[in-house]
Structure formats: C-alpha cells, structure tokens
Amino acid sequence: MVTENPRRLVAPATSRWRAMAGWKKAMIALVLMVGVLCAGLGTVGFGLKQRYEGRVQREDILGKGTAPHDERRWESGPLNLLLLGSDSRDGEPDQALYPGQRSDTIMLVHLNASRDAATVVSIPRDSYVHVPAAGEIWSGGPNKINAAFAFGGAALAAETVATLTGLPLDGVLVANFAAVRKLVDAVEGINVCLPYTVTSSDTGVTWPAGCHDLDGRAADDLMRQRHGVPGGDFGRIHDQQLVVRALAERVTATSLLTSPTRLDRVLTTAAESLIVDRDLDLADLALALRRVKPETVQFVTTPFSDPNVQTPAGSAVRLDEVRAPALFTALREDRVAQWLAANPQTPPAN
Image (spheres, rainbow, N blue to C red):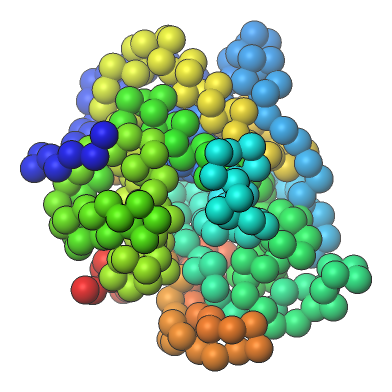
C-alpha cells in the first residue's frame, strides 16, 4: 500500500498517554527512540521480562575503546545509546541482491540528564574517519565509518563511534533492515510527509512531495534510497529520520496502546529483530526513557564540509572540522539543546 494522503498524522500529548501505566510508557519510549531499528522492551514483573528480553540476542559489543559501564550515569546522568541498522538481508527473499554487510544506519541517541528529552544524531555512513585496527583484517587508519561494521562487527563500530565523538557509550542495539517491514506492518502502516520527490532505484516507485501512507515494504524501500532523493545519502538520512518519527507518532496516536494483542505483536517483533550488548539492562533503559515523548525528540545530522571528497576508500564524506566537534562537545556536556538552537536543521534541497 503506497497512497498519497494530504493529511499529516499528528500525535498530540493525549490524556491516554498521560494516564498510561509507567511500564507501557517505557515500552513506547523505546519504540520512539529506535524507531525502525528496535522497539520498546520495558518490563514489569518476571513474566514480561522473560517474554520480551528472552527473545533478544545478546553479544559482547562494548569494551575495547569505549568507556566502562558507569552506574552514576545510569542513576542521574545523560545516557548515550548507539543504534546500528545492519543492511544484512540474511534469510530474506532478496538476500542475493544485497551481499555482505555494512552499518547503513548509524544513530547516536543522547538522553539528557533530566530524562525528558532526547536527540537522535545521524552519522553519515560514508563519513571518512579513523577506524581502529581489527586484528589481521584491518590495520587501522582512515576509512568510511560503515566499514568498521564489516571489519569487526558492532564492537568495532562502537569503538569507532566512541573514538570519533569522545562520548561514553551506555548501550548498543543492532537490527537489520528486515525489522523495518515487520515493525511498520505490526502497527498497520505509517504516514510519512516528504518535503521533496523520491524515486526508488530498486522498484521504480515515485513518492511526490507530500504525505503518503506506507506499509512495511514501502517504508523499507523509501529508507534505502540514496540516488533518487535530493542530497543523496543525506536525503536518505533525512528519510530515515522521517520514518522514525512517523513510527513513533503511529504508536502513540492509535489504539495500539490499548490493544494488548497489537502491542504484544510490535514488542515481540522488535525483540526478535535485535542484537543487544550483553551488559545492557533493558529494564533500566526503559526506566530511563519513561518520560520521553515524540515531541521531545529532535533529529540532527552530523555537520559535514564536503559530501564527495575523494579518498583511497572511494568517494566519502568529510565531517566539518569545526561544527562536528562542537556538536560532540555539546553532547558530552549535555547542552545539545543550545547547539541545536544555534544550528537549526533543514532537509536536503532539491
């Protein structure tokens, strides 16, 4: 289903949200935070903990090159979560069309110390940065940031992001693109409003500027486009952010909140799509996110100075040597709201 819709789906702060039980808010907050990459796994009691957390795959991700677990941050400080969207198609019908694996989506989620607002920072996949060594596979040095996932999996990707930003990472979550279709279909579709026309180089579908109802396959198709969208990869990043927001709005604006069956389907789908750092306590994360709502989340793309710099790794993105470090400093000092006020975000131009 891909139809044009002149009305934007709006998600006001309804009385339903205000009256919702804390554990459900935590679940929905997680849906909001990771959008198409993962979803709410807030737990209350042994039964819920076993039902959802037991479905999540665990791996040793954080460690080398990243800050150690800090209970003080979890108790009262700001938190930083790394969200990686793997483009692996393992097990999917079109697996042969997308061989290998990269982290096509790299999002850093910063939760402020007040725990009532969050900033989702997209890092362009082709950013030319220092990628630490990965045994005999890679000796270390400058490369595209998404190559870290190919060289050393989520662990090297996390080390690379920590090295780039200087931020302590409090958790890592990884999901593949198959989760996009499943999650969007689980909420029975989303409404995305595009500021420009996008044409799929995979299916030939064109979405004119305006609002569109998308099912899971269409959302997946839209999020992959980097050639038929203004700004190339930066347009794709913007579209991914639009899908994240649309999914959050869909969850908080529909009867899903009061439908145990549908909510269970969303959370089960998300849990089964995730790989999570072994030490990340999802109950603690849900507790930390319980007061975050769609309207308190802002999106930003890491500033860049050259979208097409030629490197030994091919055409890459040069991050802005002044504004990017300033953003990372603002995140470390938990004053990103001031940085955003001075650096308003705009969609890519046609």
